[in-house]
Image (cartoon, rainbow, N blue to C red):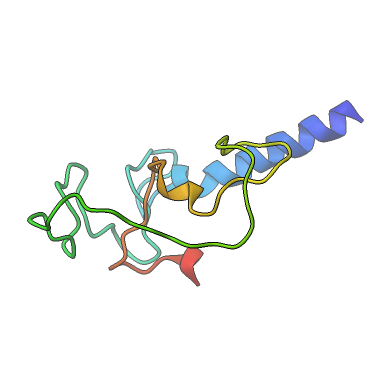
Length: 107
């Protein structure tokens, strides 16, 4: 049973890294900093901000969000219990899709 689980895990890792290793029409086995559904990525490696972002937008303020129910933990990786609504908004993701490029995960 352990061999089956390990084999499935390795197959998952191989299939998950396949498109990244292939790049965007580049040479096989070359790593790419970004992926694009069609052609090359719109933004270069060290771009300062997305084109649609207002870098002079006012900062600060207060957000109040309502929800039904309750919560009993602030741990985002909880094996049991209820996390509060909006918990994903306080942690920054390591990767973000641009909103002005075609994205297969949004389909």
